[in-house]
Length: 340
Picture 1 (cartoon, helix red, strand yellow):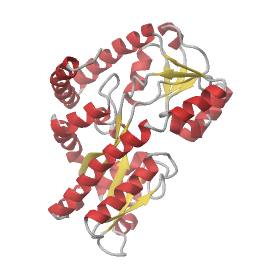
Picture 2: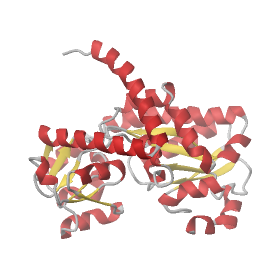
Picture 3: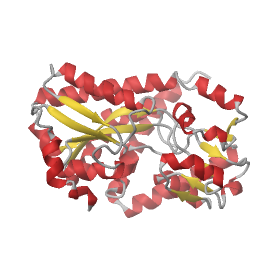
Picture 4: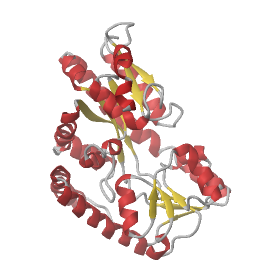
């Protein structure tokens, strides 16, 4: 496996040799991505500050040491000390991991963070990753994404049938229930695939990021809400042996830096979207919501997928039960305080 062929050579590079406090941090994301790239730099700087320079993470952009989908295995093996990634990338190893990347028709950012840190989510997340020798935590929050770019209008659930759409994870399984063909495709190939007709639709991120890929030049229907990802987490994880070898104050510094990044990413992303929506409209893009009938069909398909995944995987069922129990208590108080 390519993952472990990195093996001995990268084991030496995991702690760089400059000094024992320098740790390579392989990101699954390009350094130039808005919010994500600067956010990881912020995390590394915060950890260094809180530890008085005793822990220094070296931010490596996508692919510098490991392809995105191989970071998890490389960190578990100790070839790379730490990673910044998206939990759904580990779903092939553990299906329940997808629920810590995003939950279709699930929580907004504040609710998601609240469940993970105060409702038992983090304990389950770490239990899921324990067999792989990896210790995870949320380290950056992705606000609600767009519902996606479509080359034609979507007016009814039937319009999704036969569409080739770039979407992964649980979102792909859900759209497949409605007859769409869910496909995986690297971000750099999406625009060309839309232009040539290989794709009829795609989702990627929120407007600030989508603008970079030029989707507005080749697809003129931009749909909301991002039902597949009302919010999401960027995850930090570290090799468990290395994590256990850190003194308590250094582990606490890393956790604190991640909590800081959770708040920073929410605020930074929320205030930065309007100018991009305006630019899309100026380029002839129709910015609109999915019709209610489409959202209703997607919600029903989501419940089917959750039920099937829960039946197939006991840990998936445990995570869903934890979230739903937390959600019931959380939602009642929010409902009582809603101003209508």
